[in-house]
Length: 315
Image 1 (spheres, rainbow, N blue to C red):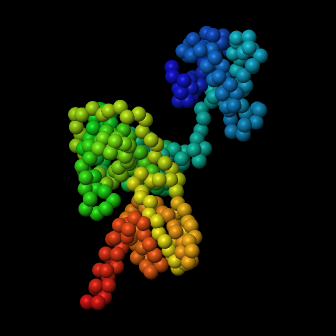
Image 2: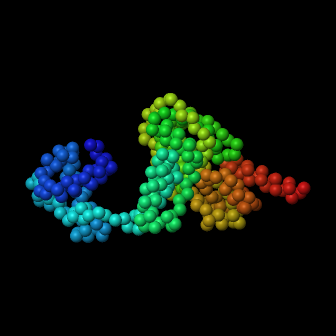
């Protein structure tokens, strides 16, 4: 059995009932039963020493007789609560229901039914159906289904991908690895051979998927999606604005990467922008308070919109 944290948790969950059924168990024999070394089993027991009921006081934690362990015997106590059915707290049930709703949004047709059934049973127990609402922009169900099919089969896919800029459609062939969520959006994490690197694709921008018979390559472990307001979002671009004092208010209302004061009462503000339409609206609102935009093309749509509005006013 691999010495991973997931394997250890699985082993610990089975170890406690086993030791309750076998008091004064032999250390070597128990290690052989679970397919681990005695050294690993002792490490597991040291972890159990810090497990127990909420509160963390001595009477709440599982106890292991370390003197007996030195003699090759395992004596466990204060773990009787594991023989009783445990109940979810309201916070635990709510967190699980939220996770199930998010999973339901990302699931294909086959999995969604099972997730929906489990969520409904859980919500019926604590009455959370009316209090929980989760929205994930995860694209079309058939798109997610075909991507899941390709990931399971280990084959590449060709995407019809609508980029952040309007009218930009590409058809990359990628090795799909996993579907994930971040900040209310669903993403495909995939290896892009043309770019020789990992890329993420928003599911709601994938218009179609063609599953190929080309096996995926070996690219190592995919990077995890970052989390947090100021982390690099998978589809975000860094945009720098130089603003006069009249535009400095945006640092109070929008997350920023950095803010620097320049000579002449000018502030340099760096933002992460995932939605060009949002940036266009922001630039139009700032108007003459914007001294400079980098990269310049980030301001193109705002400039065009301003010119169209002026043309209509002059007509």
